Length: 610
Image 1 (cartoon, helix red, strand yellow):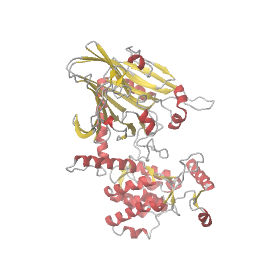
Image 2 (cartoon, one colour):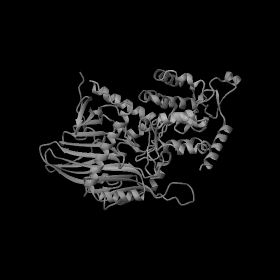
Image 3 (cartoon, helix red, strand yellow):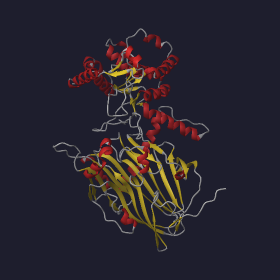
Image 4 (cartoon, rainbow, N blue to C red):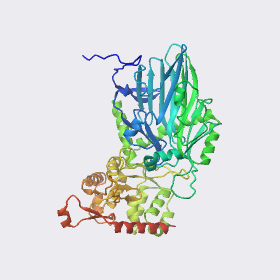
């Protein structure tokens, strides 16, 4: 039997906890969450927090995170790899410092910090809701009789929502001075490559401003960072603001944290330059036994002058704005459920955890491969734009046909038009058209060869975008499941597969709505490589062929007498047989002349676009 020694740090005896990790399903305000009790006893782990919109968040159980909108070039916190994010919890993301006064004694408490491990008897719990779009961190300080928690939500309209709560579990009143908020907020205009290569230079350009009348923090660059002798104004900002503590002191950096730890009250910051941005509120709360206080901090990216002016006007009505934020968060959850339900992701068995697991599997499947926008309904505007991008000459030829389409029509209507046309290009593109949305390339911070871009809406006018993109395997593996929910689109999936396949079977990396793209040679990049052999991809095609023969017997036979398909023109060339014998591990050449010719032809088409 093991014995445990008493350990002291100076004169302070360190608290030790040997509570076991456990997991259970719980209800919080009527919503189902999965609770991991004493999660800090586990090795740090990584989470992806999803939304129905274009948010992305990669979050460590230490509290470190990166998050943003659309892709890594619109980041709210630096886009780093898993290890750096996990280790950055003290400097990036949530930060809370409390001075707790009870019975004339003031105690320093920093929830979730590893700096004072063993000073207090603590319990830390982690909650994630069953939809995967909310996560809550909770620390119970048994010595001080207090609980602090923060929860990440997302709002399509307002960005990222961080909800904080402080609860007095004790039997006596307590006074708490606190600083709470977000550290290492990025300004708008910092791409991930620039942040990773030149983060210190980026810091020098940072400008943090506070609109004190409404408590709005603006995070921008003094100028767009370019090495050219030309003006380069930074006209957009990332933003942060708060609800629930109207009289709080606002901080735009972490510079005053150490002074606060020693009991000094901070002064409000309204203009901070060349420092890492932060948005924190400093306030005092008096809590009776059993009482609690709640507040929120919100942050978003890529806001222009008009959007900022509208937000300032909304902040003048904080109670109405608070209700609007709460409604938008819940509306986002409802839309996420609708997306998953459209791919048969709602399952009801006597095993609730299995139901939740099925929901998550389906959700990540459609995040990769996409989900159809409105069953078998097609929008004229999207289909017309698709033809225009695919082939400008064809777009001109079939202009009258496109113009005659209804604003919305069915897949059967499109198939009928395609069957009747004599234009082979229009027939091919019509058959392979797939009105998918919610898709993004496979990517996370620890996979440097993968990228993601969540294209759900137009950046200019906010209109809906239908788009899909993914590495070859990611797309077709996920469509394998999607085909069971939408069997009439199986023909489109088969056409997309075959039309993106090369003659010799050495295929491009990625399949996208507008075609495909391929890797080029990058001599200085150790992760650079080109293409895939198609032998291990044929299984996806075989699955589609099995499905369509099962659902629509005889369809395959019709393909053999029809000229529907093309080969992908990709600048990869298989070496001569003699060269293969000499070096069977080096079988492909990249055809630089063919690459230049393809790009020149594409550029010429773009220039002639109406």
